[in-house]
Image 1 (spheres, rainbow, N blue to C red):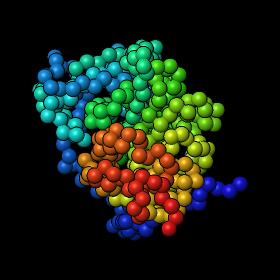
Image 2 (image 1 turned 135 degrees about the vertical axis):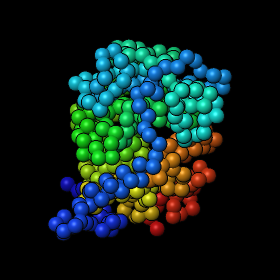
Image 3 (image 1 turned 30 degrees about the vertical axis):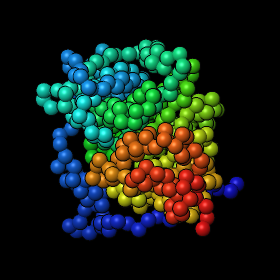
Image 4 (image 1 turned 90 degrees about the vertical axis):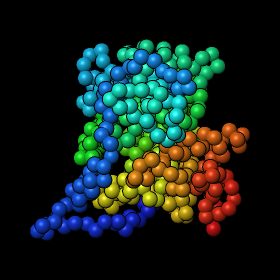
Length: 394
């Protein structure tokens, strides 16, 4: 049987491999972890569960976003919506209403301080513990008689629950799409040193994500289910799609629209996943950046294996992969990134792209191929000048 595409050669290391035996030297993994920890130590302290405590009321001009949660994290205590990094033996469900301040800047999360002020920061207005029946009923009620799409966000590595929750509220507010936001929160350690533990946690969560996608696909009032998997969440998303296909759940897969943002997936592993899943309609979209330093570090920790999120759309082999496998590979390197590692550009893409598609009257990326998305929000087929078309061989 012919392979759908052949592995692309490993990239030249961006850091010299440290000796594992030389006296006075440290393993490269320790060097990378130390480097990342040093850079991130300058960041503000991370939000704790106190940001989930509801405040009295919103203020004039503020927007509200209601996010529904399905999570494999354990509750800190029964009947509370505080979630730990522990692995729950079953799914937990919740509902949060988040207020977005009037002066909100797209792409940012204005985190509350010691005294949360809805006039200047994101705040929680309300939260409710749900069971599965209530989760389905609430989502069905939000879709209305005309039906609405649901958008499932699968977060990445080194992310705590409240960071994932507020990020989805921000994405929902900035994209201005008429979708019901659903957070699938897996039990990340939320620690730089937790990479291996996080990889195991996403493996643990595959069956549960498949269950949530099946629930949403079975809701009559839900038209389509958009799934956005970021970073390591992209690996979880792909493994879940593969599982659904192998289980013959084609009726679920036919309802999905999938976006992988900076996916932290070994390229050869991705090849086998794509072969099992097969083409999707609309085509699966992959957002890539050649200068994603977080994925560069992941590549080095994985022995130099190239990550899907750093593919080069100008590479003829990538163009062939996209056409043959029915994928949309979109280079978003020209967009600004809210993080210093260029790993979160999908946040800027979500805000810009949502304003482009309505103006064009249709999704400009309906077909498979390799594309570049420029800073003006125009889809260009690099290195060619044919706008909005799949790349052809030179």
